[in-house]
Image (cartoon, rainbow, N blue to C red):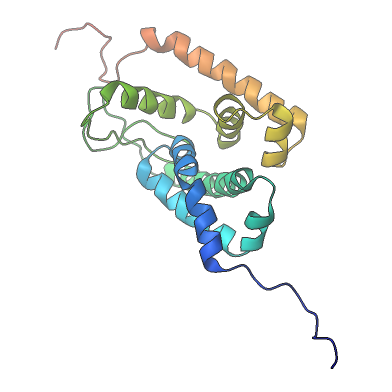
Length: 205
C-alpha cells in the first residue's frame, strides 16, 4: 500500500481555541476596559479581537505566549476603534458631567469612548481606584496606555513589550516615558483642577 497523501496540518478544533481564549478572557477583559474606557466598549473590543484571532486559531494556540499574542490583537482593535471615534468626535460634542455623577450617563473620555460610571454596589474603594486608573489611562494614546499596561501592570520588560506591540524598543521606551510624564502631570494637577461643575472645589451653590 502506498503512503497516505500529505497535506497541510488539520485546523485545530474550535473547542481547543475557545478553551484557550476563555482562559485568557478575565485578564484580557480587565486590560480591554483600561484601554477602551468603558465596559460596553471593552466588550465590543473583546468580541472583535476574538473574531480576529479566530480567523487563524493556530497562531494563538502555537504562540509561546498566547496572552501577549491576544493582547496584540486587542490593541489593534482598540486603535482602529479609536481612529473611527476620533473622527466622529470632531463633529459630535462629548458631554462630561460633574465628578459627582456616579450613576449612568456620559462620563470622562477614555481611549476610545466616554467612561460611564457604574452602580457602586460594594467594594466602592477598589472600584473607585479602578475607575480613576481607567480615567487616567484614557488620557493617553492607545500605544502609551498599552505599553504602561504591559510594563507597569503585566510585568513585561520594555524589550518584551516592544516585541508584543511590534515596535522598536526605543519607540516603546519613548511611549512609556511620555505616558508616565503625562500621568505624573495629571496626578500633580488633580487637587487644583475644577470638579467639572464649573466651580472650584468648596464653592457654594
